[in-house]
Length: 339
Ligand code: FES
Ligand SMILES: [Fe+2]
Image (cartoon, rainbow, N blue to C red; front, side, top):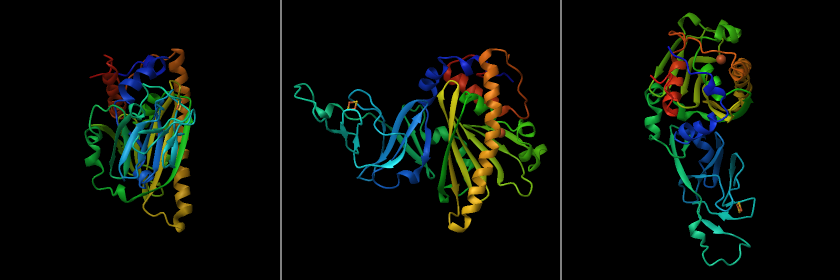
């Protein structure tokens, strides 16, 4: 199997191209739908540097906008979740209503050609699926088409019944594709996660690339909090099942050499009596992924200096890597690895 050349992980202009060809054109999983269940609630997100927000209007309708003021381009809402009746730009105080209309441009002055109705916020796309919220700037596919075989894959899992009870955000010095290559294979488990390796039947680890996702499964031994199923979805989000719930994450590039991962932890039982076991599950989960960050940071350095030349992929364990890289190559119009 071919491997995507390391130059595409470190080239200074690579992120600008990926932003246009991948991140702006796909549905991005921006959080739990419950974060915008009430009127006035919003989620503001960074999508590879592109600022957007999703807001539930007073009419109950969900809308999404570029998080960019129409005046001189300031960011309107800080990234994160919150509640607002209207959106006031922090720069010169223009005010937009919950449908994106400009309703006040204070102290602007008399200008005959200036009409507030000409300057609404730019609307983008929003959708939800089984309790998960997605936004898209200029999507090539419908959400359901992008999700592909995930619909089947989770048909028996009651994900909409889980409650999003915790969030976390971690960042590290590696290209987002190096981390993705890592996530979509279990080949590194013996070397990088010895504790995790001891808790699964590694000989039975299976990786399958399906339409729009990579599925990894492995029977857990007693005492492992994971339930033995890990999913990665094109282009950049994950869903892992664990006892009594699941986590999702979005892998978001901050720059060519820096990536953040935004986690949501969901549980079936969020009562007080499970608080300690929930905190323990989250901590054990994050401890495993921290082991991955270290190896990704070191790998990134070897790509950056050019000392690494492309190597072979394992047909048993790395078909997810090949699938991800072929999707990247295809999206960017690269010839290599796009088969
Ligand atoms: S940039 Fe928003 S009011 Fe000026
Ligand atoms: Fe890992």
